[in-house]
Length: 325
Length: 245
Image 1 (cartoon, rainbow over the protein chains, first blue to last red):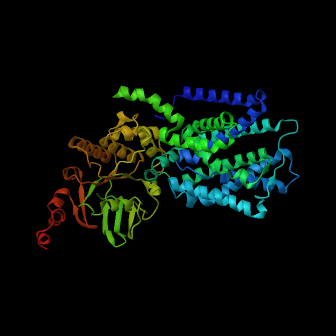
Image 2: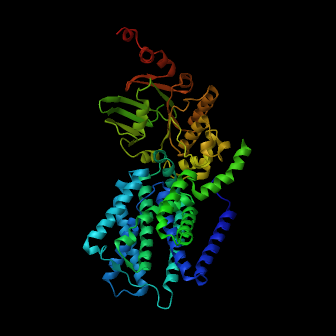
Image 3: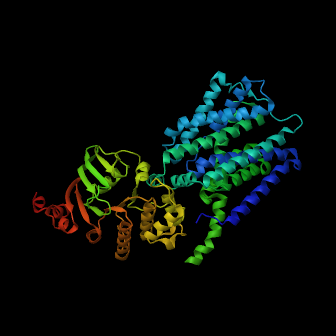
């Protein structure tokens, strides 16, 4: 049964609040290198959760979510560049609204045709979308993808920019996680789960599958695009190559596979672990990252298709199954 | 039997390229009845179900549920009106518990207010699998899965249940249990349309039997009458003429 006792929900919430407080306080104690690693961890985790609303909850794994990072980043950057007089504290708000809006329009426009594809076909089609967006952004001069685009600083003068972005990613991550949690426990979430399990049966039971899939796609795209806007500001200068990244496309899939696909905590665990492994453990072997990620993916799919959470669950469940027989 | 029909099928045909799967079939179903559709393999029984539930669009003809034309509208919209289907090959949500499987039916299904928890429990009770509610669906036997399929369908609060061979592959004890469940469902006010191969079950449970052969309706009446019909016997066993030819 899914209904958890109120006590464990409260306990989980308490642990969550404690973790967030700990993470928020961490930059004051950490050396600058680790603040940057922490930034990447939080950014990746938030992206992973946003990806999971479509890829995990609805079972439509996208291999091209970098499209939304890029579209969000450039839409925000170009708009902000047009209004250089914009107040510091308004810049990010405008950027988020425009970037999110652009991704909403893009995802809503392609949702119907692309979500008729299932499984691998959908994943590959999304990779295509990502590449088409990147090419357009790179070759249409007005979009300045090849030339590059400078984004104005949004960190207040007195503050350390690295810490500001760290805290921004943390706040964004908490919001994305909260949205995902609300979706997961709603009727909408139950419908997405049914779609993931068996789309034809879901439709027969009255789940408005097309509408739900489209909604999950747009929500996931908008959140991803808004994270891309923050990312663009943290870079300060973006080109097509720095936001439409194929390693992002790959990593978003790996985060969920590593942590546990379809769960809330899975992408967070996966992102933290993968960023830690590639940035800290393999920090001196930069060329090795993509190879290591690829290798991990192969091992995961073969050995632990449910990810870390799936592995924990089967280990916990096994004794009761034996007892029942 | 003076009520308005719950389902009205008029001149329904479905062609797949050259093959005529359903050929001008018309019938009405009265509320509160159990009606069986029988016929040899390939007669078009499953196609007929697919047409009624919106998985396929007919080439010609119309399907009316109550006073609504449901020909060609989306499957989920038909479910919202109150038509549910139990698949021939059980298709549970394998990663979910039995309770959660049925709960999805209760959450969605027919439009209107409901108590999801109570609806789920009632459906589990009616299908006789309340004791399995905590079990993961992928641990169930074939017979239990059939009951789950039925429970999930009636949890949608449907007024019309289309059950596609609910007894196929079940042993006599399980078949008897399933027949009892169908009776209980009818008693709860749900109209049942059944496709079934198991003749003793059909004869026992049905108020009325429709016989399809090669896409055409060749007989319609009470079970005993249909069983004695020369055309029905010919459809199942062949005619002496056909054997000679």
